[in-house]
Image (cartoon, rainbow, N blue to C red; front, top):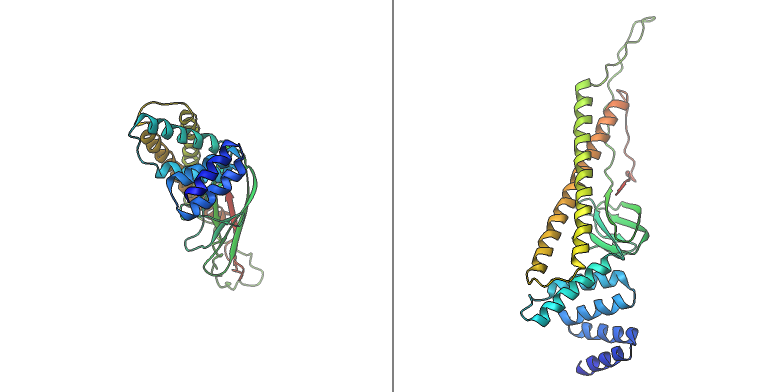
Length: 283
């Protein structure tokens, strides 16, 4: 492996970035070290392979030990700045699939348990296989630097019972069936609106804070605790993003249920097909 490292360093001195990247990939396959993943992230960034660079640099900064010397501190800050710059070139998807769905894929690429996936700007296909064999999919278009939530859902339609017909005397006018109670519609609409508004507000706030945090990470810092502060702030932003997603999902589901009660006439029967239903949401 020492010979491979020397050859990779020589290729880098010749500015043969592609060759150096191939050699470091071989080195990392032999020994999965922090140095190896950091080198791969740096080389992929120089090659313009932004998605791979973000994934590798994210793992790099997570695995780096806290800096103990001025040189290590400068290197630590450089890695964080490189990651922040690379993230501006890609988009981030937060995929939420039904429980038990596996595998969850973005453009055929497996999404890990966190549900996060980095993609190039453009249109992408998100798919998931449900436990009963059904497949759900959604198409999403993203731009560079964007963070988007994709919610996959495939709940089968339920069957509403049909009330027996009442016999009416010949010539008697048909009595209209009573509609849903007005208080139920008002309450459902108000609750749905409250969830949706709070979800949108949280999403906007989280997006603004995330953008501000990225800009701050790109600036040079000399404080040894800067990395820890950035990590805590990033975790706070992610919590707000998850809360906004939960509020949007709850508001959408409650609004759909209220609309179904208001629109569908009494006695309507909804039949569930074997293929099930597919619902797509994207932000």
